[in-house]
Length: 444
Ligand code: PMP
Image 1 (cartoon, rainbow, N blue to C red):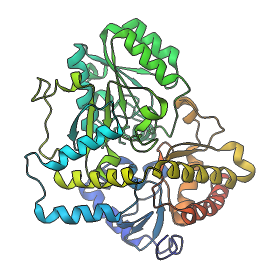
Image 2 (image 1 turned 180 degrees about the vertical axis):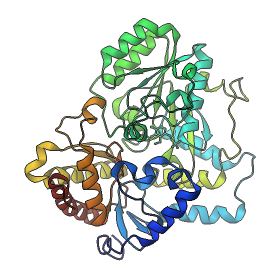
Image 3 (image 1 turned 45 degrees about the vertical axis):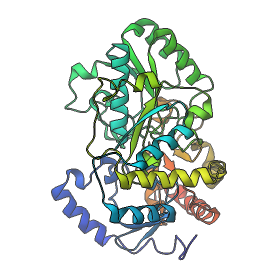
Image 4 (image 1 turned 90 degrees about the horizontal axis):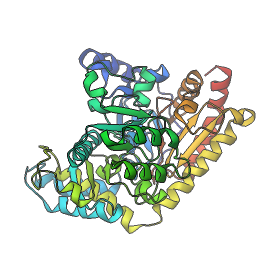
């Protein structure tokens, strides 16, 4: 931990954040540019952030927090990592976008393939949403089929066909189907229950000939962390093969989080197509989709499947991503260390719940975790849905007051970075013991 203790000043008030939020609400929906940032699910008001340093966020009032949101996943190396800052400083004077190919894009695509070998051919885009919608287009083109299967609680970005039982933001807002999504498009998406292989088989047996692809988060992160049951992913792979449907792993969150090569490496299941985002941009906007060469060669200009982007492969974003992947390649121990730290925190949180520990479940895979206010085990969306929202809201606000920034929703994954050392974890566990009292006893 650098400089000041992270917990030394989380009580400087919120006047500046409040004033900004008031102004923001006049000019932006809910005062934010992405719904969950508004703190609606925990009944609070968002902090406006001035800067990030390593494991910490500092808000505009000068409050300092140990950050477990990490920009919703991208900051595997923490805030303002020197390698990323240096890469951006080098690039900046050379121009910010060319709309023409660069060496960096080749290097990043090659690096992605080293980490995730099933991504034989890769297209860079600017967000996870773009990656998933494009992957599905490729799957539909390749199979000549229109329907897709997704899982209850999985979120794949905000394209029309995915906003059906889409987890976190949608679940906590209570609007599983967004207005504005035409019924005709929604009807092309079939929803299966997570971790229920029989249900997936039944759908594929019955309607397999209509199904272009099954898309899933191989560890669900968007309904809280829900690992796949043993054999589940392999079973889905088999069912897809029998039906002639493609399997798409949406590793926007799990990529570079649950293992060096993502969930497909960890669980030993090879998808046909993979989507990435978050960590590969190192905090700048990058997404990617890729997979079997015969499928990806259908993408324009090699093939007829159209997909394009003015800022795709943006040089600043690519350099931030490359800097991140270089750090990971230089230090192969990073993923084991991150996982150990995450386990340490998960165990610390369970202990901190004290006599109520049977009433909380901490699910953790790699460097992602969720604390549910419901008895373990939590393996399905329905079980996750039992998490006590009011308790989580009190827990969240008590932690925030003590300088710990947890996701402002009970159904979001939290993350660790390489900047989270023992000191940050110990401080978090100490604060959480008090926050549990607030959560269970109903006082702050
Ligand atoms: N897929 C998954 C699994 C995600 O977690 C997210 C974002 N949380 C997306 C897709 C969409 O990515 P983006 O927000 O960059 O569009």
